[in-house]
Length: 123
Image (cartoon, rainbow, N blue to C red; front, top):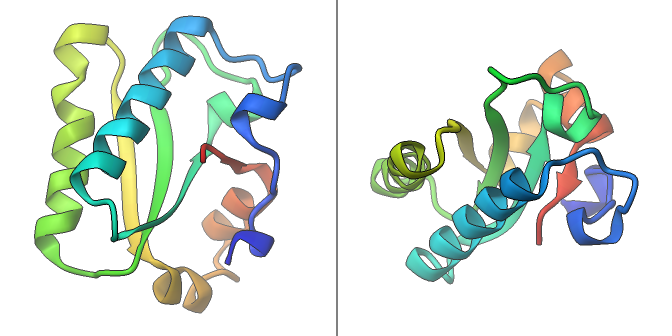
């Protein structure tokens, strides 16, 4: 699946226009979900305005989390981790959670094509 996503890594991209505090939030979110669901996370991809370098003060952090499990508890847990970080950091993490299989089925969708084109692997 990762070969369908732009394989740029967040740490290997010095030209990426992400503020240090935002990168810190992304990495903290990543560590938290990997810690909570170590066997379930396949890939974590930053997409949207931060990935394109077109963010503004009101931008949220768009992250696609690919999992091995389609359970509502995992989706809810990942989204809650992102939501719970808002009070501390003042930036919203909008996590979209789906399985690799679901992503493959809708990869021709315009939204998913944009994720594939602009997405940056976090891990």
